[in-house]
Image 1 (cartoon, rainbow, N blue to C red):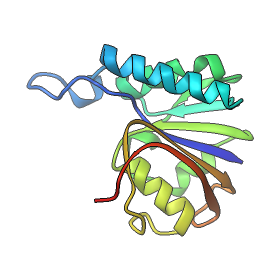
Image 2 (image 1 turned 60 degrees about the vertical axis):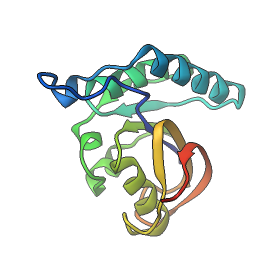
Image 3 (image 1 turned 180 degrees about the vertical axis):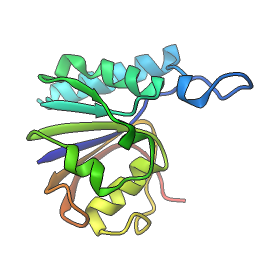
Length: 153
């Protein structure tokens, strides 16, 4: 399986009275992520399925992937919490994307490549994409590429 872990694009700032789950993408976030989608398309990357957190900014990011997705966009609560085996058991297809949040995308990358969610010091910027290949089980995947990540801290 080719698995693409994607952090949602830039969203509006937290503020009083706005539930975190209801924060939406900014215009800047949309434009930057549309450029990422064009880059993925130029690289002939397409998805069978896109799984995403039900939080609004992840839904909107997943919708921007629709032009390079052949199957459905699927909301799952599993992408709005730390990575667990239940998430990876859901994944179906040969080229699959998961759109979620930090720190959970970084933890998923570390878990899938090393077997330990805290072994790697990688931080996903908003709109970043990690391409993994292998079986979606702890320690069973290899990192193929990482676009838009922040340097280790």
